[in-house]
Image (cartoon, rainbow, N blue to C red; front, side):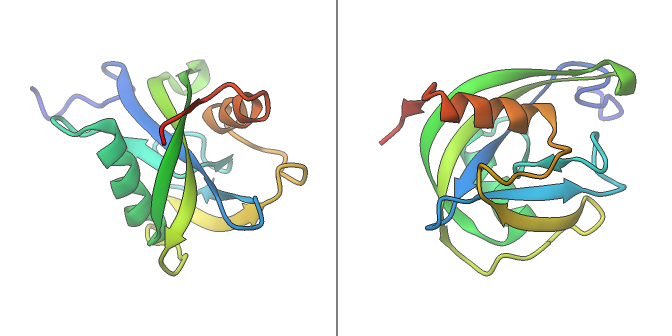
Length: 149
């Protein structure tokens, strides 16, 4: 494959993220910074893109560790999101998971992609939440998910 092709721009990218809950039933959100792939300035669940030959569940765990320094226990699968951002000419298929915080010291590991992170109650969310996270929260609250454990 031509390494100059950009996922999400030159072809449909495949990625995903997780609604990660702490013991207080709050979810972890990241505010996307200047070098993020898209939706700069918006809050999102942590996640990223699937690498060639990488299983999606492995990607979720790897991306969460790379972005936040924490480990998670994935226990649910939400419906996917067709993440089409016409204004930015991006197209992604995002797999959405549900997980619990397992261990690790929460910190921003990629400050060029993430300017803030925090735990939020589902009834006290920031206003600017990107589409894949908004849809995942809506589906979670409606009980539209599959338990994996």
